[in-house]
Amino acid sequence: MAIRALGGQVSFPLSDRVLHDDYLDGLRDRPIEQVRAMRAECEEAELGVSFARRVLQGHLDIVASELRRRNDGALPARAGALHDLVERLPEILADDHGRTSGPSWRPIDLDPEMPAGELLVAIDNAVGGTLTDLDTLSDADVEAIATRLADLERTFSHTRHRLHERIDLVKEELSARYGRGEITVDGLLG
Image (cartoon, rainbow, N blue to C red; front, side, top):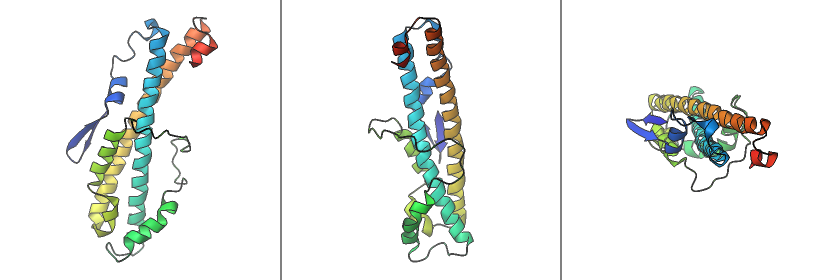
């Protein structure tokens, strides 16, 4: 998954490998241990992309709130705007934005080794600074950030969808082996 953000290119090696054209080649002939490892690898890649996507959606919500504040007549840079933003964060980041991507309550283990770091760099690049500077930016600059973040969110969503397809294919292979009696329930779940 190569991502272009502000002229840079970010790659997420795990999802790149899992989504490579030949990743599933010979799946039916692979040993069960390898198929289980592939399932875990696909799920790990999806988890990293999902985590980064959640962070990105939070950024989008904050930028959209700033645009709404301005559309309601507030000046782009005013005393206390950052304080107001911080005060409104619980409301801004509430889980009621009508997204159809599924439940966002799925727990995510924030393991420091989780391979989402490069995706988070892409988010920072799309913002081009920090969100604490929003109140000092022009309307055009804030709208440009919103556009870059929305484009990146579409990329993350597409990648996540493709990863789910891979997960489904690997799980189907495990289920088929169970159906043929090649593995037990413990082998299917292991």
